[in-house]
Length: 175
Image (cartoon, rainbow, N blue to C red; front, side):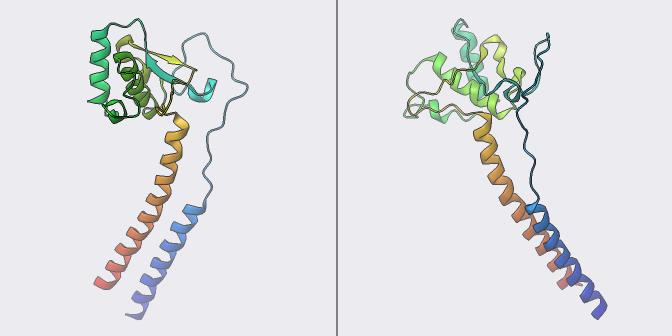
């Protein structure tokens, strides 16, 4: 019985030690590519790291019907948070379809890896290097999303450590 108890205590302590060691490991961030040679075909994947920050906005020449369909999809099935463009929100004014679609398109684009395909919306959207933010309406960038995700991952690691420790303690007490 003493040997079994010692083994469980050892496993519990090793789990705590390893969980802390994983938390302290530095995470390697992506770095900007400074000597990138563009290719003749359209880029695919994450263009933010190739040419700097980009935003996805509604194409000014797009039809109102197509823009409305794309906006409805982005705020519905696309699972974009469209509360800032609702009445009283910081991005409601100007109350135009083009402005609201631009905000929703950019939010979807930033949340989905900045890939060209995430800024299509049936041809109603285009990429821009000019920050479309204005007044109190801040258009997100991949950097702002990555910073919030980084903070959440630290808490998730700590939670997993305590969860694993609790499971091992329950196993010990049950044996």
